Image (cartoon, rainbow, N blue to C red; front, side):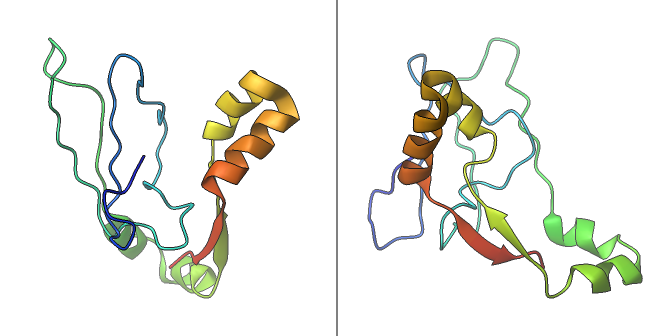
Length: 115
């Protein structure tokens, strides 16, 4: 992940044979950032022979609107810690606790409102 312009909210994630994707669970891109991007764009340069991978998109706003009013009320005003999530597993495999500390140092964490 890199930003071509540090003052821009744009983040670019590039994958190739040497840098395969590793976000195989539901996630919000770069939510560990204090100022995460407002949107994600998928721009495949090369498609798999079968037509693609398994990327799915969803609207978190629409998901929230389908919740019962009581649950919506329970979630308002709550915050959540966003960090490197399951990426920590790869760092742990590389270096145990030191690896996790290295990953956290590289990515950091942020607290954002749930709603």
